[in-house]
Image: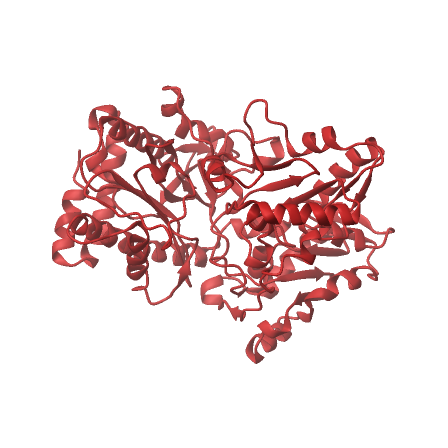
Length: 594
């Protein structure tokens, strides 16, 4: 079917006189995860990952994605007519390099400007000008034949009470306006769905597992205009908006309204705001290009958010621990598949009174499937678990108290020496980062070597970051904090600050064999202050045993063994009183000192 859709797209390109058409996996807000309405790349290529750019010419079609998805993309696009371009691999051109090499004088490059950020548009505009070609951003070629496209979601919006958010919307708006003044901005165009939800203390359900709602905000010193779909708001939320000084307007009206604003200077985040919105602003407006100030504000969790998140993690760790116990005691005795295991884990999570939904689709990957970093189990391709090998389970939950993300690789039976070594190397990496102590001003790029070091020593690595920031009942992946060594510039290295929550998730992946990942969340806290300045360290938030059945103790240093034993002692002390007697006894053995 995907090959047929690619042919349809080329017919539309021919009709419109388009020589190169570019698509991306995004919505109008540059969200990482998108609703079904925006899954155009899947419709054309079959690829279902969360990061992709697709370029189509009359005789070529290429898809660019990152190392998390190389194996998956090759499998899903087989026979589609689309070639995979592995981002970051030697000899592979970037999207921009490909466009520049294929664009010919007088030809037309086109894309839907609502789906691409302003910065990318300006970069492409330079290439088009250099090539003496033309650019069109006012059309979406799939609209004429993508009849299966789902409508834009309009799910109900709900209020996140201050006992969960920890700060009122009025206070947050006051902080944003203070930052606008600092930048000399009379207006502020905010389009990131997570930032809008955070700012207004509202949540929705327009993107699966990301509790946000389709919206834009335009802020001045006197006013705050929310552009959203009126059907999503009931009387209670409308009254709430009115009390907070927020006026609700039609979602689509943002484009025409921006064309008539009176403000002379407008703050935008050019990496997030879509290019069509910016192009609607009056030409006289001065653009103040800065990262969204809300980005850092929401990344540093306030005391209420931290306290609630810590409590949510105990319930979440309890659910995953009970799941591991059930899995180890049930596999081989009754049929279990990757998908039914994921369903069982959800049952355990639902035991918490304030559970909302999973924070992303659970990755339940058995044996060689775990080599696909973002493998998707499904009822249409059931894989049965046996009392052998390992199951990698990457999962998380949204609770009213906070968001969780945890990965445990679970031994189901006999495993090879290679698997044990890989598990132990991954554990070493995980522990090294978890126990880090670092000076104020250090960023994730400075600390990433702690995790990768044990692997680099062996000539091993993994094609993804070591960790990402975690949203508070928002996107489970949140910036600007992250553990990633290959940042492109100094600005991308945001200092780690107390209150930031980041995942610690190194792994090893062997295509066709197995995959291993160990992930917990860690909170930046203040440590000692010495003559060399203030030091920070991490507080463990995740309580769940790491499978000792796969650990080779002799490969751990004394420091690492002590760190693991201390972590497991905390897990047992925290969870055992909340477990049934038999499960508590099992946990005591599972967290024994080595």
